[in-house]
Image 1 (cartoon, each protein chain N blue to C red):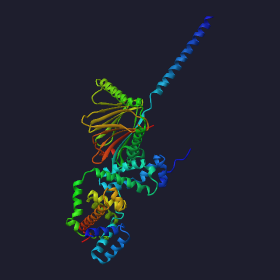
Image 2 (cartoon, chains in turn cyan, red, blue; image 1 turned 180 degrees about the horizontal axis):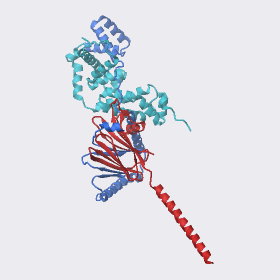
Image 3 (cartoon, one colour; image 1 turned 120 degrees about the vertical axis):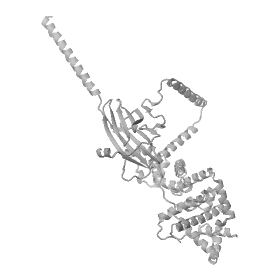
Image 4 (cartoon, rainbow over the protein chains, first blue to last red; image 1 turned 30 degrees about the vertical axis):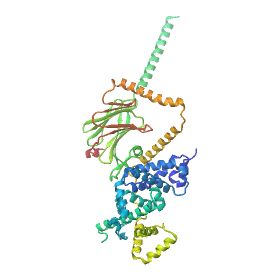
Length: 202
Length: 157
Length: 171
């Protein structure tokens, strides 16, 4: 009787190969290894737990359906991350937040006082642990509009190039650059505010 | 045929018939004794399902956890109370699960059990079903925000 | 080049999106322009802060449940794909209409027969299950797991889980 493969100790490429020929247990092992990572990416964009969970599940289903298209150019979690990002962007398009986005779009081009302000300096803070900094950045990200947060997530976390972001967001490279610039300025300003408020900087 | 022989033959007949009847009685009686089934053993667990870690509480067994986690969304399942009951055919036993909640479990023969859930003295629900060893019946509901109560009932093999 | 365009180009330089001659020219300009140098430094600092800054999170539901939802969705999609792939003969097409109609007719018949005999609060789930609710305004949902090893009655009711200390002591 053939022995059942040891899924928990199998390497990722092997699990992918097994999953490609229909081995659901291998796919289940992949899900168990990367489910948090895929959820985090979905949450970073959507900022809504339920939506992020649903979109993560959909991403896994799509991944199963498209396994034969995965040829190992990127790592499996990177490939999966792209799938969930696309689903999130589709979902954002469906949600209508035109009013907020159009105001922010105006601010990007015409430039209110805020936009003409200098980029804040946010120096490394002694005693501010990495974990605490992540939490503050996360809180600041939550205050950005969907489009600005998305461009930051796609650039900084998903590590896409301007051109790739432009394609995904169905916009021009120039707009991507403007949004990224504005988002970074806003983030720096928000971070500086919270650090000042908590007495960590003057 | 001589009368003695007739009497002997008749007596023999009688004895063999009597023996037969006794044997039949024993067989039937023994069978009757065998047919009265062993009592069933039922386990009931009161479980809290929640997404937050609860210090000081014991997590349920892997068997129960896997069963519940397959269907329900909560991350953690804690055992608050458990009871084991041995119930003969036709009898009912009560298990108190919390200050105000109890269940009555009845052995309805042929593998069927009846479970009645009471809260503050009022019966909420009664369920009768065929319960095979290894399977389970669950009564459940929400408990506060983002947690749930489960009463998991199973029958031992 | 207007001021805003220059700022965006500095950002592109920091992000490694500006290359060749354009990048060289801008670097030379930054060295002599205080404002651009500061902007370059600040953008570099923000980039540095953002590197690896995605807050780790755990899926807010159990792994088993998450997987069960995924596997069910996969099975559903595969069944759907098979159904769509099958060519329909005219007889099959006809059956597609006839069978549901027959099903509805049977259901109507059963319901009309049952109506006079079924008690008000009993819900007949099948020959193996009987359920009775004593309190009318409790909503209830019942189902079995796919493999039939677990039957669930979900009540819209919260029971008190507090334990009686005396009973615990007697356990």
